[in-house]
Image (cartoon, rainbow, N blue to C red; front, side):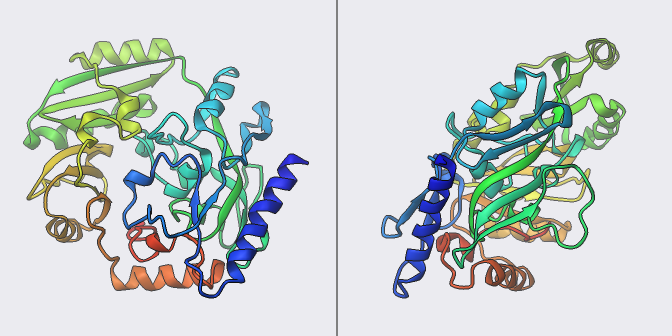
Length: 354
């Protein structure tokens, strides 16, 4: 009953906003732990806030089926504790910039952690969702079982949409068994030798769960059965790494403490050296974080190598014309009045190169 009442309150707020043609739209907010990592003037106090943080709690958890359904306002830390009690974890690594970071915020931002190339993307982990669209209607997409989906998978489309398509109410996610152990090693590597190290890292197979190159040091993160991890470490050599992988995942590592932060997404095993700024390389060269630097110049560099740029801090860049058109058509289908998160509409990177 409480869930029904909260859903009705959110739906009523959306419909009331629709009735005001001169309104400024709605700014969807949960725990507000990611606002400092979003482009555009998302914190404009003149725009009314639609607070969804109270819409929280687990709706259904099926450990045997490796499926969880929870409301969007549920803190990820609470869900992780629940899963850990059953030796399980999310199938996708979801960044948590704050202790109160919510499931809905994670889906809306669509960010993936260091383990993305070696497992499942957040988008692929989404089985279904329930939401309120820009017409004030309550709609359901997808389901709660792992099966092939015919036609458009509209639930996965919400991953990375930054709340511009509607108000997420609850989400169904894939889960995985929790590995027995984890360990990390680091090696001093020159940029010229990185391609050979990417090849060597790939030989670790499913044990590899993260790569990070920073300040001339390559860090490798392994997870799996204890015997297999121990054997891999003996073969690898190197020194014990003290890199805080959770801080890297959650964008809380000191590298991210800057007012100019961008992310370059590239084809696998690319060799990208930013012309300006400092770099942290992940995903075997497919993701390069850049602090400082000229974002326009970085955008040109990324396109030359078949990639694209995301701006998290600093002046947002407009999407290329084809991406803007695609984004406009998708948004018009969900939210024809442009009600939700208008400050993010013309600058967010959903679909920019994915």
